[in-house]
Structure formats: structure tokens, C-alpha cells
Amino acid sequence: MVYLVGAGPGDPGLMTRRAVELIARADVILYDRLIPPGALDGARPGADLRYVGKQPGGHAMEQDEINALLVELGREGGAVVRLKGGDPFVFGRGGEEAQALAEAGVPFEVVPAVTAGVAAPAYAGIPVTHRDDASAVAFVTGHEDPEKAESALDWDALARFPGTLVLYMGIKNLPAIAQQLVTHGRGPDEPVAVVERGTLPGQRAVEGTLADIAERVAEAGVRPPAITLVGPVARLRQRLAWIERRPLFGRSVVVTRARAQASGLARRLEELGARVIEAPAIRIQPRPAAEVDPHVAEIEGYALVALTSPNGATLLMDAIERTGRDARALAGATVAAIGPATATQLRRRGIAPDIVPDEAVAEALVEALRDVDVEGRRVLVARASEARSVLPEALTERGARVDVVAFYDTVAEPLVGDSLAAAAEADYVTFTSSSTVRFFMDGIDGNFPGGARVVSIGPITSATAREHGLEVHVEADPHDIGGVIDALLNDAAR
Ligand code: SAH
Image 1 (cartoon, rainbow, N blue to C red):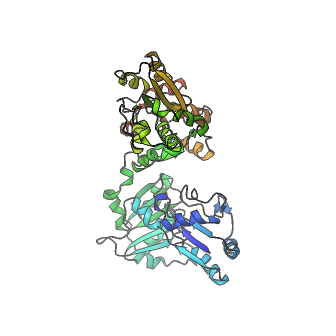
Image 2: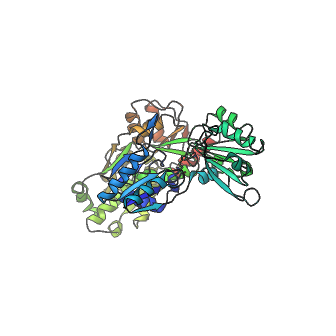
Image 3: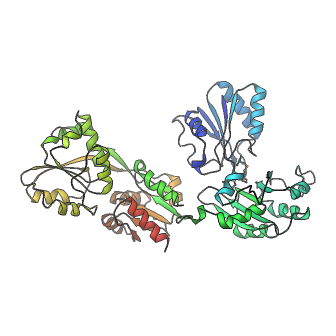
């Protein structure tokens, strides 16, 4: 089976459920340049991913060759996905590919998608139809030079078309297109908008009229992919633009937390309009069960159990379950947690921590534990292998018998080329722990993005950043992810 699948205009959130499903199932994926970032992340490991789009300065593959390849792969019998930007049957040559498959008797399925001609305007605040302003819409290719005598387009008819014109691939020919429309009778003051990279983080819109749009677009340096809209609806953008008004629109923010934990922060930043560059500098590597389980086997003997991070909390509870126990194993202990996220992890696993200091630092926990009698009693501190010794030292001083058990190591995650390149132009770099600072600085080899402002989750992380020669521009308070986002919003509004 060959699936002709549209991947939508660029925002990964606009991919259809069917597209995502088929990408996950495909044996082979033939894809183009204009597919959303990360669209192939869900492909099976081992799937054969082949780029068949344009290279700068030429075609990677002629259309005939792509058709022939689709037929050949289709006959081999696997699940073949032909993945295209936007909708496969709107200026995507999907029609030709379907014809080739039909002729060869290869079964196929078409997965329609959100087309750029509707989505890019929508993200720029332009409805392509409107009760008062446009009762019809025409999708037009701007690829053809309108001066050519043999043009397939009837410029006279297009000029008279009673509705919105949506031009794909029209940036190079824009001066000639605008000229033709005016020559054939469309008013020179007809509103026009050009939307570049619509639905993507770098989205930009230029407004004008048929008389001046070519000049404005040239001035702004607009480059493909871009959609051109001609008609009164283009003006509605002045009231209806929405994504561009989000507080972090146009800002790029590097997230250095471990990939497994980055998604919450990344999603919230994206919802605020930011472009998020995930550059996980660290990875959480649990210590082997053989190492931690013997300590957990004595869990009932501890008077105080202290968790210093969400990972520590999760891994302790995992070990408790792995050794045949459940939340009741902590029934006799005082449970203390540093940080609201650590407390949340515990609650998810059925433990309401007794003590969570207001400030998410070890010193604050020491202070909060002042009235807990630990003299001569056993204390478990579950944490990362490398961590500050403030808590265990303070408790030992007060006569506690402290076991510090490392439940995980924080190890370097190699930074990949793409995220490094993107990070180099970032507006903000966020650090949510000292280890993200250390490993990110190692990973970039001292080349900290020049203009980027540093956002730190709290004083300990800030101190580490300063040790690495960074100026900390923004420090969160409270010292959690919500605090990081609020601090970033404040800074962006400066
Ligand atoms: N099948 C695609 C169109 C392919 S033709 C679809 O349905 O959207 C390629 C043209 O689509 C580009 O030249 C540009 O005009 C438009 N396009 C694709 N992605 C775009 C985007 N994110 N923003 C603006 N225009 C886009």
C-alpha cells in the first residue's frame, strides 16, 4: 500500500491523526523539504527515510523518478508513505503520483491535510472567506511567469474573480502578478497580504496593496515558502492577528533540561508564542536495581526520608514497588521533599510529603526540619549521585544516622548539530539545574550564543552559571518551572 500523506503547513500540531499514525507504521517514507520540523520523529527505528525533495540549486529527484520509485516500492509490499508539505493534492503533484500508482495497479490511500493556502492566512489573522468580504476563494499557482504567452492562467478571469485569490509559489513572480491583476482590472488599492513561513515559529506577514506589495515584499526580504492573498479579507488581519500578539512571539528559547522532562516547559513556552529549541544537555540514568534495592529493603527502618528532586522521588517509588512494597512502606517515616515538582511526583505515587520548604534549596529543608527529632535515628536521603552535601551534613551534625543513596546519575547528553545551530541564534537560554549549566557549557565548547539572555531557575543554578562565566539576566522566583516562565515573560515585556 502506498499512502499519499499531507503533513500540513508546518506547525506539527496541525498534522492529522492519520498522518501521525501512518508515519509511525511506515516501512519507507519518501519526504519533501516542506514537512513540519520533527515530523519524522515518530517513525519506526529502522524505517527507511528518503529525502526526495528539492536541493538548493536543483531537484534531488525528477517527478518521473519519484513516480517510478513509488510504484516499485508499492509492489514490494511494505507500507510506503509519501509525505508532503500541506495537502498532497493541492499543488503537491500528489495527483500525478496517484495517477502513476493507479496505472500500475498499486493500491493507494490519500490522506488530505491542512493546506498552506488556508492555514498560513489563518495564523496571520486572515479568514480566506467572509460573509461580507469574500464569498469565494481561488487557489492559484504563482509559479508561472505571467508574462509568458503560453501561461495556463487566465489573468483576465483571475482579475475579475469575485473573491479571494490565494497564490502559492508566487514570491518570485509577485511584481508581474500584481501588475497583471491591475492591468486586467483589479483595483490597485486592493488589499494584499503575504505570509512567509506561515504556522512556523518564524512566521512573518507583510501587508500592502496591489500597487505597492511587490516593493514592500522586496524591502522586507520575504523568501519562500510564502502565500500571497489578494482581496479585502487581507485587511482583517489588522484586527484578527493573534499569534503575533502572543507575549513570546518571535523569541527563541533554548530548553536544556533532560528530554524526558522538557516537554512541560517546552509546551508552555510554545503556547506563549516562543520558538523552542530543545537542546537537552543532560540525561537521567537510573542506578542499577542491584545497587539501590538493598537500601530500599530496609525502608521501614528510616525515621526520615528526604527527596531532593522529582527524579529521586520517582525512582525511590519505583524501587519500593519493585521490591514488592507499596506506599505503606513509608507509613512510619516523616517524608520531606525539596521543591514543588518533587512533592507532586510523590503525591502521584500516593505519598503526601510532610515537609516541603517554601524555598526549593537544601538550606531551606534543613531549616524546615529543625523541629524534627533525628537524634540517633536513621535518615534516608534519596538523590542524584552528584549533589550538594548541605542536607546530609546538617543532619549528621544533629546526630542522625544518614544514608545517602544515589538513585541516578545525571550524565551528559551529546548536543546534536541541529539544536546547536538553532541555539546559536537564541534569545534566551534556560537552565533548570546546575547540571544543565555544566553539561550545556561543556557541550557547546564555550561558544555560548552571543546575544542570548540567561534564565536560571534559582540561586544555586545561578551560582553555577556565574562560575561558568555567564551573566545571569533572569532568576526565577519561586524556583520552579512556573517561576521560570513568569520570569521570562517579565523579561520579554521589558
Ligand atoms: N501541497 C502544499 C503546497 C505545495 S506548493 C499545500 O497544500 O500547502 C509549495 C508552496 O506552498 C510554497 O511555495 C508556498 O507558497 C506554500 N507554502 C507551503 N508551506 C507554507 C508555509 N508554511 N507558509 C506559507 N506558504 C507555504
